[in-house]
Image (tube, rainbow, N blue to C red; front, side, top):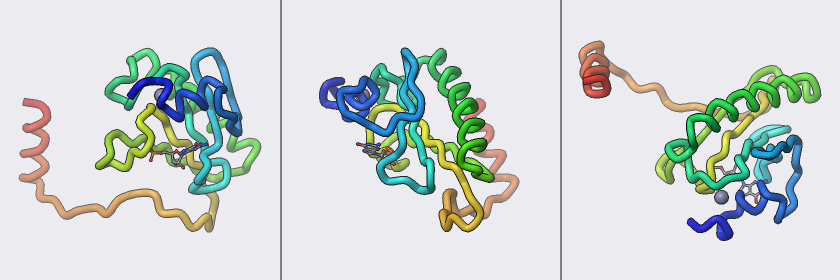
Length: 136
Ligand code: 5GP
Ligand code: ZN
């Protein structure tokens, strides 16, 4: 996708206004328009990378550092009791905006959200098969 067609490029670079809670030269952190909980935020790089595959390693480290900074601030200011970090890659995995973003989802007791998956049954043999498939 061309950068000028990307909504998160426009938001990250200030061409479209957003509820910004942090900004520096390379990143903007905004409140999600469809929040899972109070304070649900998105870390956006100002450069366009479609997903984590495309994100340079250097940025990956910076994004995680920034997540820690924001989590600390949001815990202090919002009084949340937990956090989910979610990062979707690919349509099948639920990605709807194809500009890398990391979801920061503060959790509160009785917030009514369910973020997770259905655990499947697996045998030790199957686990070993998968381990081998990945590592061989
Ligand atoms: P994804 O499903 O791609 O991981 O997440 C996309 C997220 O972006 C969704 O949580 C959605 O609510 C949010 N979103 C989509 N468009 C906008 C927008 O224009 N502004 C903001 N602040 N959030 C958006
Ligand atoms: Zn973009």
